[in-house]
Amino acid sequence: MDSNLAVEHIQAKAIPAYAHLEGRWTNFLLACGNCNSSKGSKPFALTDVLLPDRDNTFLAFDYTDDGKVSVRAGLTAPQTAAATRTLELVGLDKVVTPFMDGNEKLVVTDRISKRQEAWGHAVVARRNFLKNPDDEDLLEMVSNSAISEGCFSIWMKVFEDQPAVLARLVNDHPGTRESGCFDPATSAANSPHPNADGLAHGRKL
Image 1 (cartoon, rainbow, N blue to C red):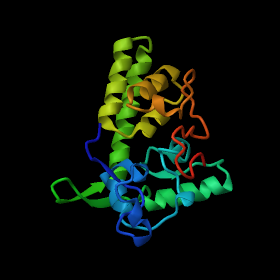
Image 2 (tube, one colour):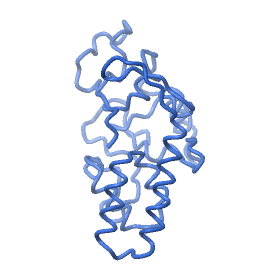
Image 3 (cartoon, helix red, strand yellow):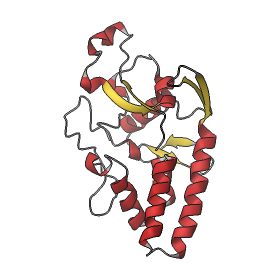
């Protein structure tokens, strides 16, 4: 699992309009340093973006072997607008992202290369898996590799026609099955997000 994670305010406490949300539980979200750095203190309305604690963001984006992320075709106009705003806000369309690590050192990550590398590893894992798809140890190795690598959506994309692997990925990534974003029987993505906590402006996707 990528260690470059932090719990940060969704709407920045530095913005006067959101200062009252400082420390409020519903204004916290676990995200990677790249996304947090790109979002920074930019102002935005919850109605205009998709958030993974209340929207099924898995359905918002497409991933390709060149490392690029795009808004998924077939969304409604409001969903497309929110997905586009989210992609731009957290910099999923950026090639590189500079951010400060836990030691306050500037780190520049090549986001596209990271996704290309994950795609390549997933393709190799798929090739090996298909040689013996009934091997439970091999299935476990695929899941462990995906967790170690990160880029959950890429692994789900590469194995999209392998139900056993999809189920294992959903089950083994902490909190993913419990989110309610995936069907318990088929592991297909559900829409809208159940938003069991009743978070504001959720269930847009």
